[in-house]
Length: 415
Image (cartoon, rainbow, N blue to C red; front, side, top):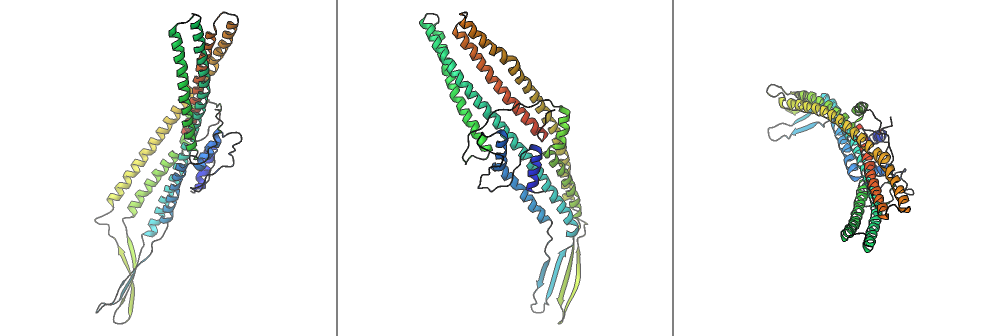
């Protein structure tokens, strides 16, 4: 399996493609445009093409492919010569191990399994990178929304503080109320400053994952979180994950490779070396074949066979462990998605509409002289708090959906 095969399989699972690039260059995929702002999918493409840690991991495939080439190589014959000296005659010997002809196919097959196992792990690494980028994108979107609401909260808190001061001047408020209003305004300003720094941090984290830490960062990111369907059947997702997850396929290949190592350890008991010996005796050079055979009487490679068997048992248990972990990942991610979906719908459909209507009613009541303007401002403050929690719920839903897709091992289509 080549790097292009890894890229093609990752594209089938995620819809994102990448290619090998030079370590000293930054690649801009064809689907990335900067005019309308970087979308989530465009950021994922940038990460797959430019993330240094991901491409450093991809180099492992080249190492194992080199091991595959080495496993298929035939050894060179051994030539030895005894130089005639005094009464000692000239002697020439050529040796070649015959066991290579039945050990080589097993070693090649074992190396091929290692290549396939590494490729599956690389696909899983790509899926993990996509998950991390989508998480960072959700964090950036939430950070931007927090900053926007914080600016409105500062304006609102300052208005409340000014109104409270005016009430104090008219004798309708106490010094304590004015102090509390001023402290609230100062806290709103401090929170706005802190959230602005959080936005910078989230932006830099996304920039790093995209592989542009040392390059010009466009900065124009379209952070609108799109709504997704959450109607999925848990058990069907588990079945789909058990068929699709590349790390489970890697664990299965590891079991196959461990079984091959048992057979290889047993085959290495027998060593047969053929030779051609030539010796100069009384003038003419006489040649004849020879054969060296290792007799497995005392050492039958019991230790090597036992180690191979132990590795096989461990690989089998790791395969079962991976299956169980995948089932847990899918069920837990699906439960989190349903929880996030219910919470988001409650904020969007149950809590926000009455608050929006309350703002309108408060303004009408103020216009009619039934309430003070402070009541209107307090109602707007509750509206801002609800919007902030709605944005948090939307980010949680996006992260839960992303984690579910990573747990299943591929993009999910709506039910």
